[in-house]
Image 1 (cartoon, rainbow, N blue to C red):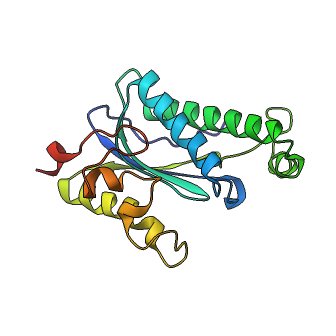
Image 2: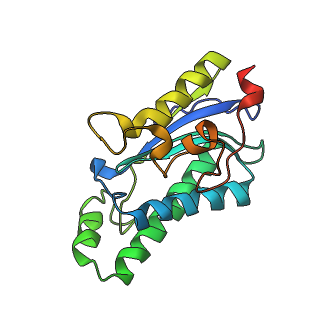
Length: 186
């Protein structure tokens, strides 16, 4: 019997999390698709009462800095977030009669007896935030990701709507509520 390694979950800890779309497909290019992701993230924030400190929605991945409650371990929160987002994205493509995109999601499925569409890779990367320096480094990484030459989505982090950069750099609300990481940066 094989066992899958899982990181030890500490509810007092913040986590830098990255989750990627299946086959790195750019499923979140449109504003509507990005809105589905932020709505799902906000739903998890409200329902699970996780704390969201930073985020960015990229065309084929999402970066988060979050803290979960003890009764809502990181693995369960990520499972529910990915399922909720996938369900909404499939419904979105069905409503638009986008059969081509739905077919791509069907082809990505590796276990047809367990799922019909595949939006996300099965795993996600989670790193415990163990210091103020590490938190600041990861927050800058998250916010500057859209500025990278590979993506070239914006010239300045605060101009990219689909992240928490505006909250920190301009002190304006992000597209979804964000908890301030200030106490962890001291």
